[in-house]
Length: 129
Image (cartoon, rainbow, N blue to C red; front, side, top):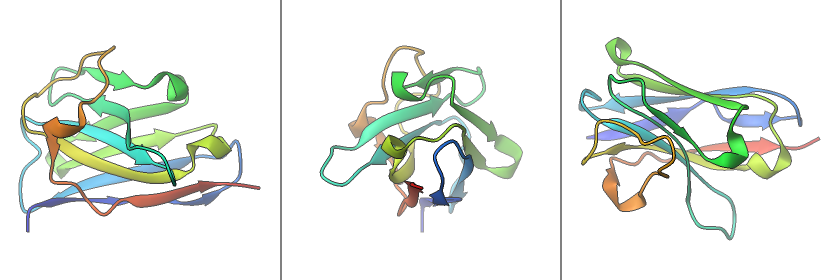
C-alpha cells in the first residue's frame, strides 16, 4: 500500500519540543516535495511546512517560523518536523503528504492541498499543561 506514515506525536507541556517523522511506505520520496499539514478540531486543514526534494527549499507558515524546522533524509526515505517552543495553539493532528506536481517549495507559497497525495493517518500533537 502506498502511503506516508506519521509518528512522534504526543502530549507535551507549553514550551516543550517534539520531533515528528514521516516515512514512506510502498514508494520512494524521490523527486517529491513533502508537506506537513495540521488540523485542529473544527478547523480546516492548514499547510504548516514544506521541503523540497533536493534544492533545500522550505516553507513555514508564519505562526511557526522560528520554532519549527523541517528536514529530510532521502536515504532513509523519511522527512522530519522538529517542533520547539510549542504552544497550546499548535495542538492538532499533524499529517504529511507528497506533492505530485512539484519537487520544490516556494518560501512564501503555502502548500496547496489538492496538489498533495499519499496522506497518512496523522499523529496527534497536544500541547497542554
